[in-house]
Image 1 (tube, rainbow, N blue to C red):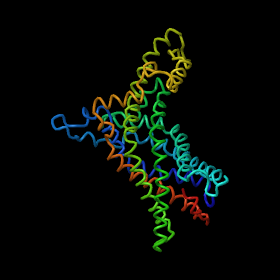
Image 2: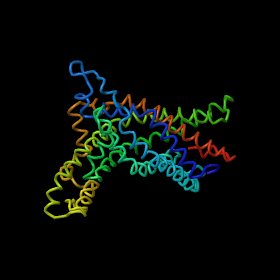
Image 3: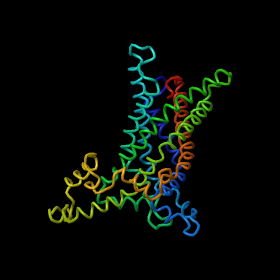
Image 4: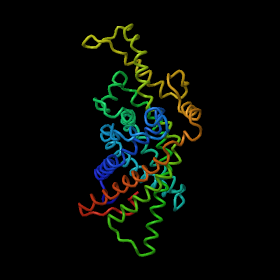
Length: 353
C-alpha cells in the first residue's frame, strides 16, 4: 500500500472515530431512548403522547466509555479491512479470470465483515455501558458511566452479552454499506473526470468519500433498523441480567465457602465461565440461559408496538448514519492522504478503499 503505514491507518481511524463521537453522539442517545421499552414512560407526555424535555437532556451521557473503546476498535477495523481487502483482491486476481472469479463487491463485503467481527469484540462492552448510561436519568448526582459500571461489578462478563446482537447488526450493515459506498464513490469520480472537474485535492477526495459513505450508510441503516431495535433491547437488559445472575450465584458462593484475601465471599470463576459458555452456545434454549433470544425480543416488540415498533428510530438513525458515516470515512481518508503527504509520499488512488 503505497504511502501509508499501519500507524497512518490507526491514527486516521482514531481521528475519524473521535470526530464522529463528539458530533453525532447526541443523535445516538436520542435514538437509543426512542427504541427503549421505557420510551413512553420516561420520555413522552402522558396526556399528548409527544416527546418531553427529558428526551433531550444528558445527551452526552456514556460518551467516555465510547471514546476509550472506539479508538482501538476503529483502528482494528480499518487495519483488518485494508489488509484483508488487499489479500482478497490478490487472491481474486490471481485466478484464471483476469477480472477475478468473484465480483469486487463480494471482496469488499467479505473484508468489511471480517473487520467488523474484530471491531465488535472490542466495542461491545463500551456499547453496553453507553446505552445503559444513556438511559440514566439526567441530573443524577453520580456520573452515568460510573453508575452503570457498578451494576456490572459482580458479573463483568455480562458486558460482552451484546456481542452477538452487535455483530448481527453490524455485519449486514457493513456488508451492504461498503460495496454501495465503493461503487458510488467510483461513479462520482468517473463523472467528474469526464467533465474535467477533478482537482486532485484532499478536500475533493474527502468530500466525495463523505457523501458516498453517508448515502450508502443511510440506506443500510434504514434496512437494518429492526436488527438495531432488537440490539438496543438486548443491551439495555444486560444490567438486569447481570444483577439477576449475581443474585442467583450468591447462595452458591456461600455454600461453597469461597472467600477472597479479605474474607469476603467470592463467586466461583468456574460458574462465571460456565455462564458465559451457555450464553455463547446457540443450541441452548433461551429459557435455559435465563434470558430472551433475539427472536423472542422481536416477537415481544411486534406484540407491543406492531410492525412499526421494529422500525422505531429508523429515520433518526438514517440521518445520524448519513452524518456519522460521512464524517467517519471522509475524515479517515483525508487523514491517510494528509499523513502520507507530510512524508512527501502519495497514496495510490486504488489503495483508497
